[in-house]
Amino acid sequence: MENRTVIVFGGSGGIGAAICDLISKLGLNLVIVDLKEPAGCDCEFVGADLTKESEVKHAIMYALEKFQTIDVAINCQGIYQIDPIEKTSNADFDQMLDVNLKSVFYVCKNIIPVMKWRRGGYIVNIASMSGLRGKKGQSAYCASKFGVVGLTEALYEELKGTGVRISAVCPTSVNTKMLSRQIKMTEAEEKKILQAEDVASIVVELINSNPRVYRKIIPIEIEIDIDKLEKKK
Image (cartoon, rainbow, N blue to C red):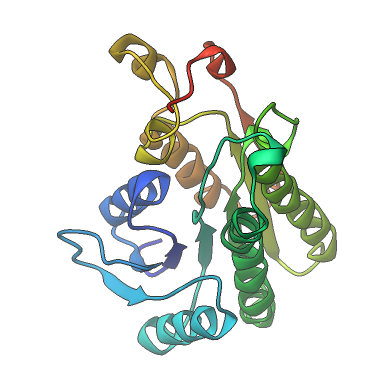
């Protein structure tokens, strides 16, 4: 297990950082790909704009040259915005799709041939419960995350018989800076919603599962209704 190589896209903050923290404790080879290098990073880092396919390709080639293999790829990149559709600009919508969906497509498109060649590997896409059911004020975000779920489901079917597994993890609201910029929460409410390490533990459980275990969509619910909390102005 210690010889496996994991590449985490969007691993510098939030859920991605929590995933990288757990992976580093397992002693696996780790490559983080993001716009900014995380503080105190002692693993391999590649700076990249994941909305550009050329930079995604460069990151994949870097990991292959460094470790000769990529066993796991995790897509954590994402942005979040709450607005009714009439207040969502075309630029905002395009950015949501570029960061949340198109970048995942670029990663999958370029890493699947590598995994197919060695007949093994695992791709985990961090989607959202907003990719399974529509939510008020989240039309652009839901569109992007429904796209990630649909992409994952289609690739799940395409990859049957190749030895390559793919899953979409769909958490409801997670206590990260991305959420706190949009929603007002008390300390008690923050403790009731998912923490980044909760999602990370499920991702690590997936990638450590026996190769005969296949899981397509993994929803993660919470007790509190986040839609009833007040949006920040």
